[in-house]
Amino acid sequence: SQKIEQNSEALNIQEGKTATLTCNYTNYSPAYLQWYRQDPGRGPVFLLLIRENEKEKRKERLKVTFDTTLKQSLFHITASQPADSATYLCATAWDNYGQNFVFGPGTRLSVLP
Amino acid sequence: KAGVTQTPRYLIKTRGQQVTLSCSPISGHRSVSWYQQTPGQGLQFLFEYFSETQRNKGNFPGRFSGRQFSNSRSEMNVSTLELGDSALYLCASTNSEGTEAFFGQGTRLTVV
Image (cartoon, rainbow over all chains, first blue to last red; front, side):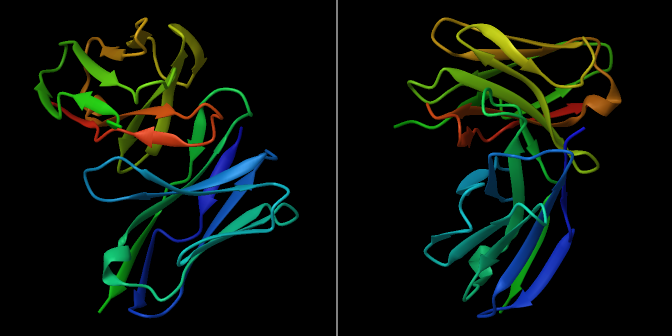
């Protein structure tokens, strides 16, 4: 069955540094990958989507890459701030029809001042 | 534009009872999905409704059911509650391209 893994359960970095989170998928070739941010007790919030034919996507301080050979997506936050502290989830859909997204377990990022 | 609204925010139920959770999607969104989130299992897909029809279903027992109304509002029902059903239940509606999910705040269900 389709599976998404995120390599770190938790990641601590110093303010101002770049945070890099990893998402790997198996048994599937998704047409796109998504990244969400989730704060405690709240629902996930969509951040970025990258399609299989895109190598890189940027949005302000966020950058996502997609390597279909490695079956991996990297999520970068540059010039990190304490307000970036949250859990980050990657997700993909089983197919391009329907909303049965498969989510990774998430990486809890803590940006230390 | 109002976001996805879930009610109630918190619920405490006793084992064996049943519960109904409600979700109002973003206006114009026809797809509504439900997820269960627990610390051990993460975010797991329950089912998806589109135009009042269940279009996809995750791997949950039949005690978990749902429905969608003509105005796209959706309800989720869990019967014969078990302690392990304690979780944050999230509802999401999606944009017309089906590429972005908008989540509600969730309903925190505690079964005692």
